[in-house]
Length: 190
Picture (cartoon, helix red, strand yellow):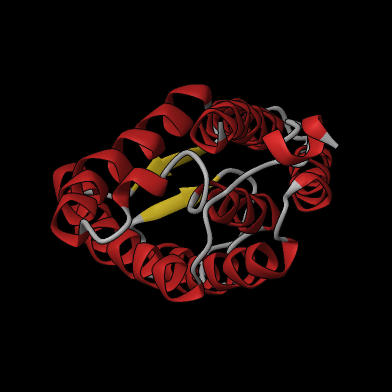
């Protein structure tokens, strides 16, 4: 029964994460960066409220946000990425930070299958990180620096390091993501 709860929780988490990604990116592309970021952060707060172990979730979300601020601020400062309406050389914009917080919500849930699989996480980061930014670029939220191929390669290398690091942090914190929304067998029988 608990595997079923974890699966349902992972599916819901993936949907909520994608909704958060979408509102952040579309908000940034439309000039509504703050509204998109606030909506995504509210979804992250909802995640904390529903998680069976919020004490394991918020440190992971904070770690993802901290790493994300550093990584994407460096990407912006070195011209790898240009975030729409954001001055280069400053800290990553709020909507990017909200995306990283949202990403932190996925590590114990829909990305739990990567636990202990650091080489796989590296490969997934190498490909998936740039693909997410390509989606954001197509929606108008960011542009890549020139030469474009070099910017994509640097993003891929960054994500090839960041994703396994975040999986490692999630593993050290422990826990399997479950939402209280889905009753466990013990609660159903009581």
